[in-house]
Image (cartoon, rainbow, N blue to C red; front, side, top):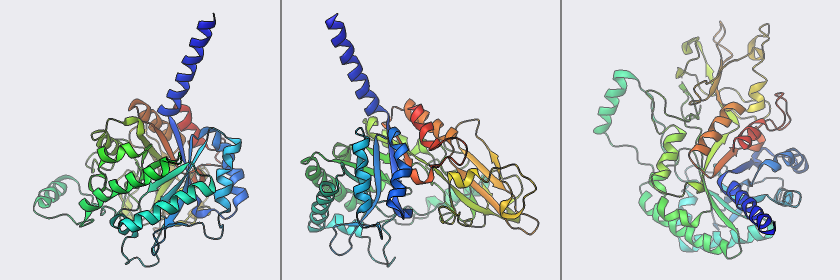
Length: 431
């Protein structure tokens, strides 16, 4: 009887280890819109029961000293302390500080990329590493996440049919735009940087993770077999394949799981994940990124009336009241537009939702432009059902888990009638 009890305890322990390792829920917290520390903590606290990791975004790099710097303007370091203090109430939670994340915007857009300059110089790397070690220990973080701001790929034009075939042939004789002339050097330097940083952090028991930002080429900048030993996990941002700012004239699915007909196959989660799986056997270290928001274009008279993508668009739609970002709406900002009141007109008129019974491409919603060519919208977005489909995909592919981008754009107050954090919960329950 005693042996059976011991065996049962061992089995339960092993099962718990497998669950934690094999199905992690990684939650990103983008603090760029945070103004009230206590309100933020109150709002995100209910979500912590579902998160294995909380990634605090974002810190930056000082362009003169190459040390880590705080990007939370007006908050000092209060939010750092408040977020890491959540571990006292949620002891299972590990909190990491993320660097970059496309939030570290230079005052002069023409200045050299400091993230590349840091890699090139050992003194710059040491300055960063020493400051990172200090930040982690001083504010109680469990490690560092690098959402490294490498140069991005250039937007691709969409062509179909004969025109697409011609442009493909034409491309054989035309060189591609160079993203980074020293990409091969930076690729090698990034391996060195990760090795040095990991040695410093691991000596204090801290973690090191990597977030691949949208439109950053792993082929150009990441030597996957070489970097994986230094990383606890890698989050792949498998979304924002198109955005109203990169692709203002064409509205299309922004975060499909599988490639779409007559589209670039690289603009799909499956393609991006498979590229990494082709270069590493450590699928348990790969985490699939899922957004909790939508990208929004303007539909005009040239967009047609069907809404079926891809369609002509007229740039980014106006900002929402909550996120205040053109071409971008949080999930609660989208769900309130899905009402059925046909009597409302103009910007208050409802948008029509088109689901995805194939579970391959995602959901979109649209509102035709009116007789004056105004108030048209086209939205590609994530909802609980599509997020659950992606969690199922991650499970089938034996990935290490799913990451939500981010807690502030999920329905944290339950205004959509699905409870608080419906997208987060839909993912967690599938894992």
